[in-house]
Image (cartoon, rainbow, N blue to C red; front, side, top):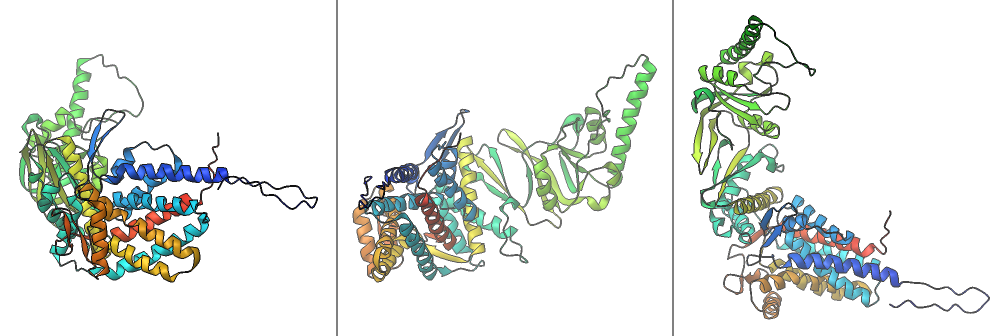
Length: 533
């Protein structure tokens, strides 16, 4: 594709000269950059994939296997390579799992496109052909899928544990998978079964113990202790809980000013007023029968003072202070109560009711548990434990992936096999379809089909098997009609993957293919990078 001087016939017209070199160089540079990003995460694909240790500029260390997290933390400068980072983010939003797969598929497609462009096929032709192929691929996948019911808990657990298998916490998948399934099923609203908001599952991390001690709490967990000033209660049964957003402390002036007190009697008057002010507030609170207070963090002044804590302790009211503002919505939804913004609006109907509020010692700290909530909203809390911060963070990310997988199944109730089986089947069917097509299109579709083989190839490679032998044998099995034959990484051979319970939601695979294709088409269409200073 070197720049060729096109000689126009000498009929008095000027000679035209077309320079295509720069366009090709830019395109190749983009493809190369994007492929190098894809190769960086390729080794972390699958159950035997490696983990990445990321050291950030601030000295924080993250160990993770999650494609979206790895790419998010990598500082990618090249604009086309940034598109792959965005790609894994969008897969994380749509499906939650398969963030590595989507980048690997995009990398393989780019490699094939490079070959096609070198053969002299126009980028637009390549782009349109792979779009057609991706639509066909989604059809093929949908035809392979097995419908699943939400009542069929086993299938849901199987797919959640498949998602967890490639993570650091894979040995705990027997505990975390059912936990993820139960928490999603408990927040599904029968009136709107398709809408699952994962913000209704709160994950509280607490250092100490092992991942085995992770539990699902029907209620609320606060990662803070009850305020112990003045010996207030630390355990309340039949609790009436108020969530307040005002301060129980003497009021401040609106403007910065200092008050000079010259006389002791005036000083006593000020203190007396303060005491009366706080006491009247606490009497109002007590009169509604409230015995647990959750106090929102305050920026302007102290939410509670020692004096108010003393009076609250005398009134036998349990106080949890410094509740984060972001948590208020979750708390009120769970307790089925209303936040109270002013002491004048403190009424009994705004309170939440629970059987038990108690402080529990956990590891080196304490947490507050609220259980037996009356008319509890559709939320749930997961208390994650771990021996160190790295394991804790990774357990949280893995759990999030498992929750997303169950959410996918709630939205689109179909399962397909895992272990590279759908990709090889796609590759075979698209290969056959490309023979029917005419001209360049068939050629491009064939390349698309070959690109999909990267998933089983990489799975085998990461598991230390011989990738060429495995992929050839897989093709052979699929050609004989075994649709669900896939790579069994544990046994190191090819088996029927559905029988081995390696399943994934249809949404993960279809969105991976459509998103990867979309990203590759975009990269192909770019022929110049213009920097604007």
